Each structure stands twice: as structure tokens, then as C-alpha cells.
Amino acid sequence: MADKKVSALSAITNLSKDDLLLVVNDPAGTPASKKVTVGNLFGNVVSTTTHKALTTFTANTIYTGTTATFSANTTFSGNMKLTSNTPASNVAGAEGYGAGSMWYDANYIYVATATGTIKRVALSIF
Image 1 (spheres, rainbow, N blue to C red):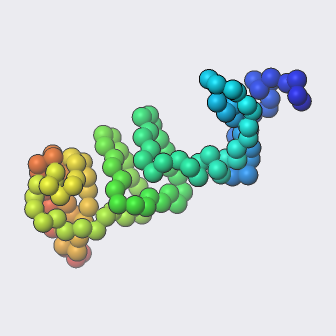
Image 2 (cartoon, rainbow, N blue to C red):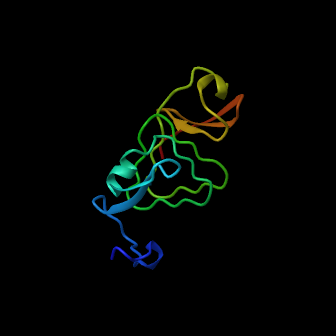
Image 3 (spheres, one colour):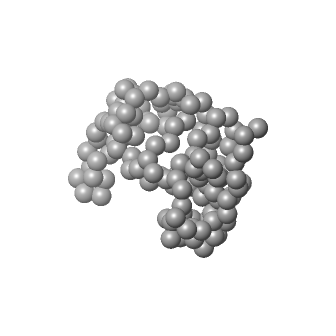
């Protein structure tokens, strides 16, 4: 296998965290072939990740932290949980929210329709 090109290797479609990947360390200086597990590679991904194309999350996707921002043509289905927070004013920017943010408290659902505007809808028992 030492004489095989990477492009000639068989493809794998389902990775597990113990699978190994080939890494060329310091390619501009003194290149050295190294290995990294998939678990270590993605265990070091920074908390802010930007997806610039269609991204699909399926089955038991959990977001943790303080903010998840979605914009433009976003569809949610199933059991969705939003942040619980009562704003002190109706100015989205002053509250730390951008246009398109949604959240709730015990009485209202809030939507930031612009940087300077929060609108709310009253909740009722049905």
C-alpha cells in the first residue's frame, strides 16, 4: 500500500471517531506525514461555524450555547425549542438580537423583524 496514490484508495461514506485521516503537517516548511482521528479533528472545531450552502440536520440535532442564528428560507419541523428570555425593550440591537431572531417567554413569542424592532405575539391556552 505504500506505493498507492490517495486518489486510488477506496472511498468511505460512514466515518467513526476512531477512523484515521492523513495530514501533511507544515506543507510550506518541512512537510511531514501525520495522522489524526476524526474525533480529534472535529473535537477541535471552534464553536462558531458558518455554513454557506444548504445544510441539513437530521435526527436528534441539539444546539447548545447562547445563540443559534438562522436566516432566509429556514424551515423547522418536529420538536423545536427556542431560547426563553423576556426582553427589557423592543429594540432588537439593544437586546443583543439581530433581525430574524426568535425567542419566547411564558406569555409571548418574540421576533426581531429588524435591528431596531422586536414584535411579539401573545400566547393563549387552547
